[in-house]
Amino acid sequence: MPNISMPNGQNAVKYYFLAFIVLLFDQVTKYYFNATFTLYQTVDVLPPVLNWTLAYNHGAAFSFLADQNGWQKWFFAILGLLVISFVIVHLRKIPKSAKVLSLGLAMVLGGALGNVIDRFLHGYVIDFIHVHYANVWHYPIFNVADIGLCVGMTLVIWDMLFLEKARQKR
Image (cartoon, rainbow, N blue to C red; front, side, top):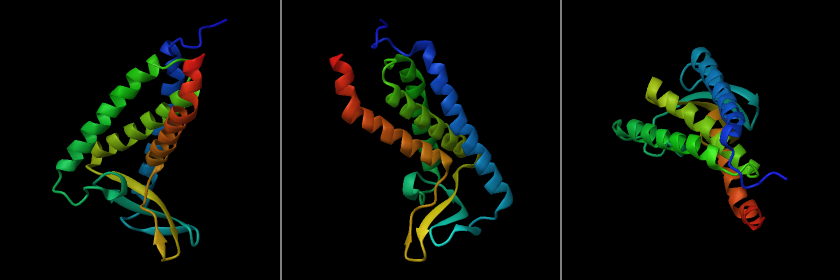
């Protein structure tokens, strides 16, 4: 019987590949919207709840610190690089049985890479998914990398709350 607490090790490659898929989808969609839309151009997808709207985010989530004078670009880029480094190393050390945790961290890795690439190439993150309700409520515009980050962190928290204790009891 295999040891379930054995680390991912070389098995982490499949999670790195998933991160690459998230990154690729993120970068291709950002390239498309940046090349075909003008800034703040909006196209209805599912009125009144979903538009494609090109926007540039100079800050972090919800445009946090976007109104600063540029130092935030480097702060968030370095923070992203630290997260990326941690996840790359940690994915190899996680037990093979922690599949939800590994999946979540792979998605975080792909999302973090996508947004860090934007910060270095453009000085901002390209966003284009605009969820809203008519002109009453608007969620901040986001991108595929943000989806990877949010879904990934949800899986990490799910693992932390509901799966980690059971794994440690084995």
